[in-house]
Length: 364
Ligand SMILES: [Zn+2]
Image 1 (cartoon, rainbow, N blue to C red):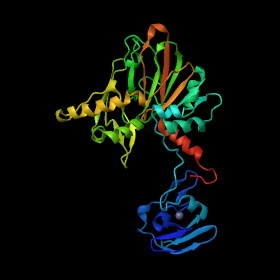
Image 2 (cartoon, rainbow, N blue to C red; image 1 turned 90 degrees about the vertical axis):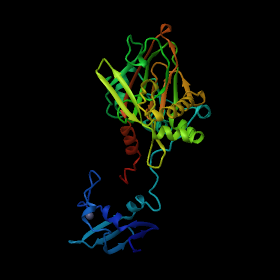
Image 3 (spheres, helix red, strand yellow; image 1 turned 135 degrees about the vertical axis):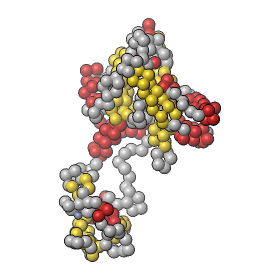
């Protein structure tokens, strides 16, 4: 039925403004790329229909334009694009925030490199923020990881070896087997959202367990119990730095540790004690240390930590802007610990998951 400003089809309302903007004719919409050609700024708002005809199969609208323009919408297309009262659910799976007890009760699945499907391991990766692929041969690692998306190159190249190195430029490569506090990688580079892999070539040392922490879960509990300190971490930008004598870079990036999205939910966590460089005004320092120290206590609390041992051929995948990783101290003389790490921009993971979830009949 026709109404002021919108038309109702099968109980769903569609604004004329929206309908004119979504015209599917080849002059308004490029069918191959599914991109828009129509320029909303060229028509008066709201667009006026001369006639609206609802048939069993399609909705036809003739617009009061010179020359007159006709839009034809298949009813099925309209219903699949309905936004009344809200747009349909996204295909993305919902997050499951976890702590140690939750993972004890719901042990994460391990995926075999030779038999797992993209859908299986990405489902866990997008819900829990991490997934472990088992029995991935070292010669297959780069091909397997590169198939997800273009490799994100850093000052280390396409990937870097995490093994004991004399005069290490990062604590991760220390030849003393230092423990690492929970952290996200690359906090000193501008706003990265990366999928990270950590691959175990060899792990025969005593110690050196891998530890993961769900930064979103910690942030949620932290917000609940310490709302003021949460706001300090969410509203105060601080600086992360990396001084690299070998490649000749001094990286600096300023960001809040807890990054909030429009509605105020945590959408990214950047945290790396080894790179933190404050740069705060005098009056903020005491309060910031208070909040930061409290948040760090949460991250170091075993109740939030998933601790496990990586075996040769294991490949850990994690959302580097959600799940923090760390390792326990190890004795370098007791064996050999040789890991490799690299990244792909998270856009490629999300984009591939979305692409594979669309109904090929319906299209985007
Ligand atoms: Zn058109």
